[in-house]
Length: 388
Image (cartoon, rainbow, N blue to C red; front, top):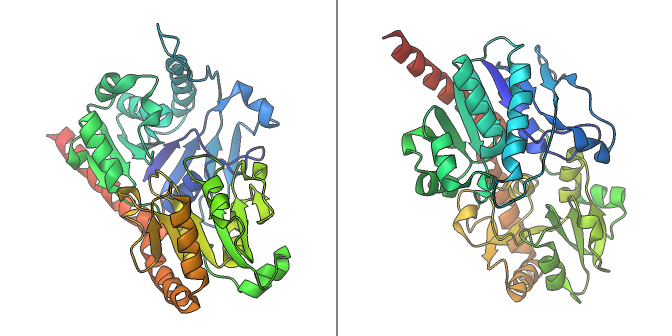
């Protein structure tokens, strides 16, 4: 298939950590033999993050065909409620024009995929309708935050017909159905996947030597942004005064965290993540909400026992064999779970083995294969209806 991916998140030289999960999905779809093109509009105000990325560039991922990435400029008006209107609507209109300008220069695709309902999903839906292609919207939001500019009723209307949805969890499917009235037969659930050829255990002591970590410390790893929802500060509070317990925080904003327990913090490029995970003993993510959490899957693939939240947003990913699940707002519960695993190396070993087995269920290449088959089926059905 010839596929156009529309996204507001995609790595660039200036922002290498932005949208790596989208990039990994695009690459996996390309490995299925699909001809993949990315349209990632770039705000004219992006200069505050560094130089503008090239408006056209190619990614060579070791397959015969390359992925072309288009980065047209557009005006972003932020996303603020002005009572009489919402600036997010102006941003959306500008985003739509930028996508349309590029799409008009390309051969008609088999499908147009947009990641998140707004801005990319709506732009993909409009473009697909105009050129007669299949529209697929990827929904990975932990809640429907992206609809703020339009509201529930307008969003229902915008996505009432013409689009199919790729939800990365059962709770996200329920969000689409319960709040937006999307029929179940228009939604496919596929939990996020990871590249298992990149995410695998490395020698623990070798990784500790590489990063300069003490061999005797019990190291807890956290991967995620520094926001209250993810809970890095709750994790720090939980390990306060715990003897020989140290923490690694990998993610945007974590460089602002302060504690003597921290041995490494700050954002890091994606290839470094499995190395940091492999240097740890356990992975802790006391998150309050998620769509489908790649960080937990990556930690399992590196063999780390998991401590994470109770809640249906984790049900598609973890079970009792791989994780201790706690109230993510309860610091004492997080602390007790850490101590439980710290004091029971045999349990950690069994959980680690279970994690490695469980991670095999989340191979991003298998996810891409499944999505490709689904999309091909939808295209065939659409062509059959059109020919009647």
